[in-house]
Length: 205
Image 1: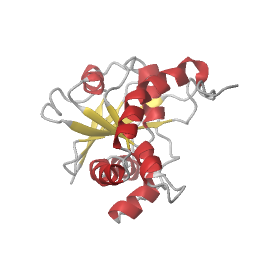
Image 2 (image 1 turned 45 degrees about the vertical axis):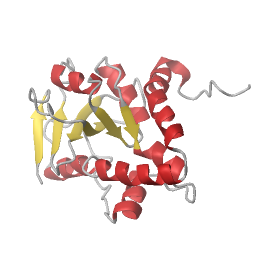
Image 3 (image 1 turned 180 degrees about the vertical axis):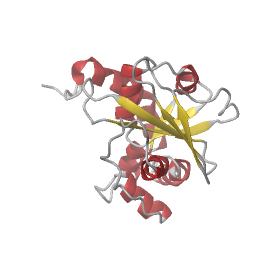
């Protein structure tokens, strides 16, 4: 298992044979329109993680953008709503197709209200994730080894989580509902970016 740090973009053809990649991002905060996108981390489920430290002056990352929009590659997220909106805002692309382990967890694990990545990974995979570096300075010129390890940990387990959650969704008869939610997710992110972040457009009032 290894972590690879890339400056500005992914190497061309890095995920040419991938059918599903796990993706997460690191930002300077959690507010759309205020906090910049700094790092995108990706894993093909092979135990390796590739971290892209973005050039915030241009966000010119054609290989990354091509992967995010490739219809043949499923993008796995945990709380993809935020990442997808960030990619749309800063990279100018709408990410699809997608799968979100947090949505899957909420639909499958109705016996709990603990759907954070740390909780889901601990229960379903027996893996303990550290969140110590979550609030560190992701806009720094150099990422520490600890930051890189943290960023990698957020994508290294998503393929296995998807498999476990899919089995639970099928068992509970909710796989079709989950797929519909995944298909809608990029549009929900676009609504967030357009100003409906805190509005339930399906509500009566």
